[in-house]
Length: 307
Length: 220
Image (cartoon, rainbow over all chains, first blue to last red; front, top):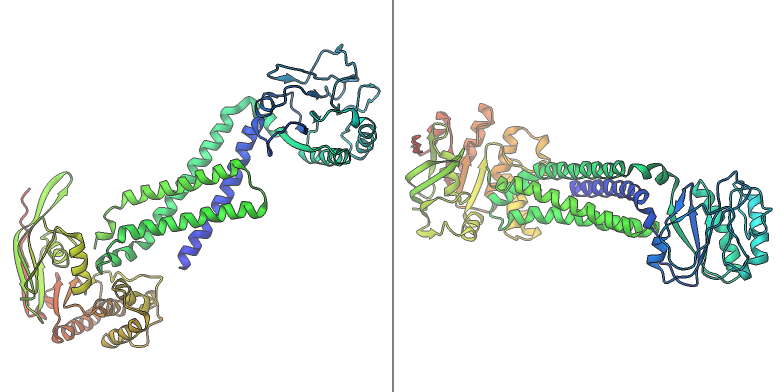
């Protein structure tokens, strides 16, 4: 029993680490298409656009029924004039740079949030600075003044290099939207780390592949050790006429793996860190463990008979 | 005749080639007999013992227990035969290291679905028989080789089988412990059990009622 508990804990801890790491790596890779919540019409979207050069909006297009909305974004930090993306209708990818002579007539819906301290442009509805409090004051002021004019289908883009800052900004806008009865849905699209790796996708694939190979190998080795350490037991069962010692071995493996899998799910539910790719990874991991155990059992089909 | 093996054939595939280990062996044992099976390495002593115990299936031949033929093609029948009539003792004791003496002896009793209170009584008696009363909670690693083999004997006796099959039971023991184990097996035998021992040791064989020699004769 002690062995089973130790193995159970071992699988739980290992799988917890694996799923977190692989989930994180995968998140870096997939966050172009990652949303924590479904996108709905009449929502205000909040996009964390961390140091990325572009935002791929095809995801939003494909996953929502919004066909007419405004996205307002900013240009680079040192620019005095804001560059705004505006679209009605067809689009695939929006790049964060529009012609500087683009004519914003003030009837569009949305908000501008930029890095620059220069808020002289009258078209700015809201402004977020890198510094925090200052930006917050401006944002509150500006948004409060004009948010009633902002349509419900608006996307706020915050150009923040750090996720923590983006989250802080989210709080500000969340409060504002709440005051105006507008739901605000966070949409995470790109992260700074992903930006660094985006040109090296094969590296990411390699990391994930190596990680899985290591994990499956570990699962295989642990299954092997489990079997070897219990071989005597199964042998004795057979010696003294147990009807199905082989099934007993399988049942032990399945029981432990299942317990480990359940523990993963419970951990995620308890930590409220539950998301679809983590679930997918935990299923993949458990499948890997089952499969490796199956391989071990294939190796020892008659082991319990050898006296 | 309590146990009869008639015209037993058994072959293994070794390096892709079929090698016959036992070719037409016949062998029988009376109730209360103590028999030594001897022969050089590879002659098929252990194979014969395992066929007699229903652990291995012979390719052909008959296994008769107490005038009833056991269907060697039926796994279920062999399982039942082992469970009801056979007790095994092996050279490496085959004790479960993370279970105490009581739990080790309880394994065959659990297989036979004997309830806890009965198990406790049977285990006490078996340990008394092998001179290890009071060692119920001791783990095998804390015992000497001789004591471990006595636990293995107690486990083999726990289900009260008619036949005890011992494969080199003294092979891992010094002469003193080997002597104790043989005395124990002799005592078991005198209580009406049939004991069949596979051994290389002439000293061990000399303590038995009968010696069966198997000659190595392989046909590829």
